[in-house]
Amino acid sequence: MTQLPPPSTKKLGLVIDLDTCVGCHACVISCKGWNTENYGAPLSDQDPYGADPSGTFLNRVHSYEVQPEQGAAQLIHFPKSCLHCEDAPCVTVCPTGASYKRSEDGIVLVNESDCIGCGLCAWACPYGARELDAKEGVMKKCTLCVDRIYNENLPEEDRQPACVRTCPAGARHFGDLGDETSDVSILVAERGGFDLMPEQGTKPVNKYLPPRPKDVMPEFDVLAPYLEPIASDGKGFVGWLDKALSALPGGAK
Amino acid sequence: MHPATSVILFNTFSGLGFGLLFWLGLGALVPTGLGAFIWFTIAYLLAVGGLIASTFHLGHPERALKAFSQWKTSWLSREGVCAVFALLVMAIYGAGLVFAETRLAFVGIIGGLASLGVVFTTSMIYTQMKTVPRWRHWTTPAMYLLLSVGGGALLSNQKTMAAVLLGIAGLLQVYAWMGGDVRLAQSGTTMATATGLGHIGKVRAFEPPHTGTNYLMREFIHQVGRKHAQQLRVITLVLGFALPVLLLLFFFNNHVVAAIAVLSHIAGVLCLRWLFFAQAEHVVGLYYGKR
Image (cartoon, rainbow over all chains, first blue to last red; front, side, top):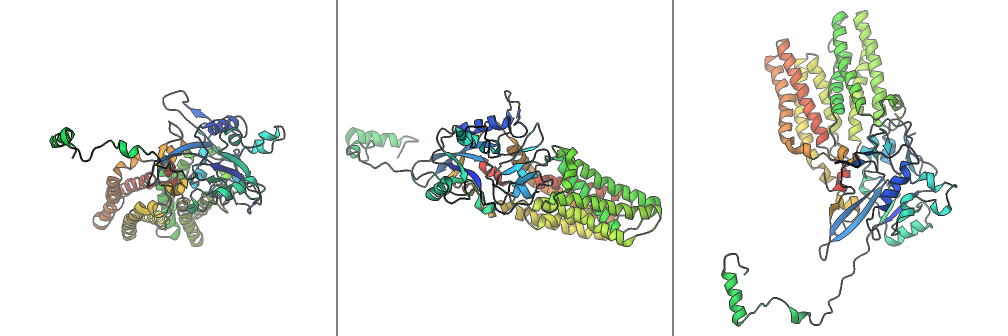
């Protein structure tokens, strides 16, 4: 049913550290690798080795340049996948009931055998978390690796989403965000974790940790004032040269 | 948003068909026998033809029956339920007129209002999208309803009614465009809120996730087609509203002129619907630094 269940006490989700992410895209690859051969239809590629490659991904890493008012610009790598929203607009728009939110742990999933591929859930998602697979004609999205996290056939350390398991920088964390005492909840509280597009009212479960403030290199070079490269009060030949060059058309004043 | 041909055809022709069914149901014209058969055939061809066109954009049209199940939350599901109900009721009403030359007035009114309900539920599919600020406004359902009843009046040869409704629709469309052009900016959703990085400084998309395109960019970002938007708006107003109204008021005395008015209106509405999608900015575009 596409009616949202009452909020679950268990809210499984990811915490993504924008300070630590190095933008290696390993999470993108491990996600595609696991999910193309496990839960549901494979994640197809179109023209993968040709001139116009395109394909279905459940996790994509953007990179943003942020220019503070003072100081150098910062480059921030930004992984983005389904945020498993508490008030998921993608669930209620579904006409067939294929799109649903699990009442036990809050994971948002698609029952692919009921999906008619109308694309409305992708329209309703502000985050671009859902992609209609061009070959299968059904909607694909992050399952939070539901087939790993409860899978007793896997060693215990592998019972977490593939993206989290593979991240070499430790920038991705998985846990219960409904439990205030869980590691991920403490991390969010300590680092000021935030929601994406809070004004959309989706109440995402996944949180993002902001980049830590950059420190500023103090000026400690005692020789620097003596090495000022541009003479502002040139005398003699240098002074004449400065004036002469400035007088030429296009010369610096 | 990507202006999919199937959805544009559906919105245009089904809107017109259900508009005609609305007037037939309300008894604005009461044809009987063969005449009624022709009128109802036209209305059903438009309404059902549009509905069939709309299934062409589905990934799995063979599962379309499942879409009737979620009417409690989904406007698309409600639209499906409403459409089947309206078509069935109007079929009973039409059968009465064609075969028994009897007008079942109550059935007609129920069917006519249900036909309007189809158009309203269609419009709400778009209006509910918080992700597309341009659509999320009362002018969206108002325009859908006005175009449907106005176009239906034009098709059913009600000169004054059609001229008044299309005149109002034209003016309201100008108002909807003016408001729509600034609604994304007013919505408060920006690259800063999308990334949560606005507190550091000005955010710019540096590198997209992939060198190629993807489903999201094809479906939600349609910048190229907006190039001629202003010219298309003028064409929409002239063909969709001004010309039909002028023909109705001053030249509407034979079938050729009527046909020109109808065709001009259809061309204008096709143009309008193309703009409705092509100009709609989905907030996911912000993640790509695009609108």
